[in-house]
Image 1 (cartoon, helix red, strand yellow):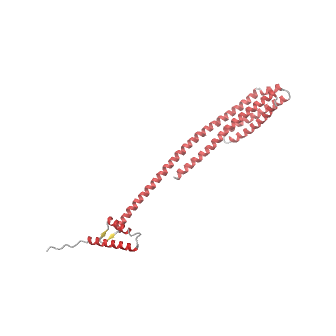
Image 2 (spheres, rainbow, N blue to C red):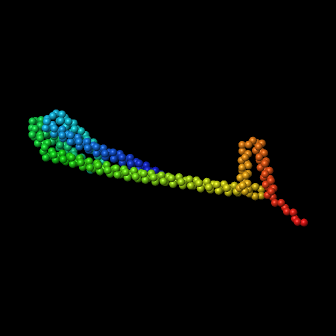
Image 3 (cartoon, rainbow, N blue to C red):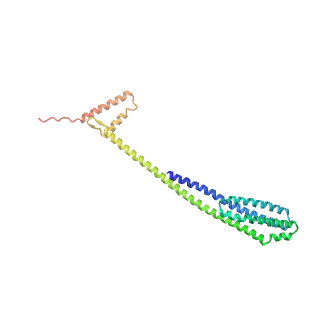
Length: 261
C-alpha cells in the first residue's frame, strides 16, 4: 500500500511539473509571435518614415525597437534550458544589431537630405538578406517551440494514463487488503466460537455427567430471567430452578429392579 501511494504521489508530482513546463513552452510561442510582429511593425514604421519623413513614424520606430530588444531578452530567459533555441538567439542578436545599423544609416542620410541614399540602403540586398535571416531564425525557434509543446502534451497525456492506471491498481490492492482483513476477522471469530463451544462442553458438568447443550441453554435462559428482578423474585426463581434440578437428578438415577421371587 505504501509503494502504491508513493507511486501515485510521484505521478501527480510529475504531472504538475509537466504542466508548468508546458505552460513555459506556450509562453515562449507567444513571446516569439509578439517579437515577430513588433519587428515587422518597426520595419514598416522605418520604411514609412523614409518615404514620408513623418516624425510620428520615426518615434513609433524607436518605441517598437525598444520593445523588440526587451522581448528578445524575455525570450532568452524563457529558453535558457533549451540549447537549440539559445543557438538561434545567438544568430538573431547580431542580425538585429546589423538591422539597427542599417536603419540608423538610412535615417541619417535622409535627415541630411540624401533621400536616394537612404532608399538605396533600405532596398539593398544586404538589408533584405538581413531581414530574411532574422525571419528564418524566428521560424526555426517557433518550430522548436511547437515541437516541444506537442512532445510535452504527449508526455502529459501518457502521465495521466499512467496515473489513472496506478490509481486503479492502488484501489484494487486496497480492496484486496480490506477483503483479506475481513476474511481473517471472520475466521478468527469462527475459531473463537469453536473454542468457546468446546470450553463450554468441557467446563459444564452436572452431577453424574455433562449437561447437554439443550440443558445448558435452558439453564442459562432461566438464570438470565433473574436479571432485573427484585431480590425476593430472584430467590423464588432460583429455588424453582434448584427444585427442577433435583427432580431432573432423581429421574436420572436408575431404580433397582426387584428380583423375581
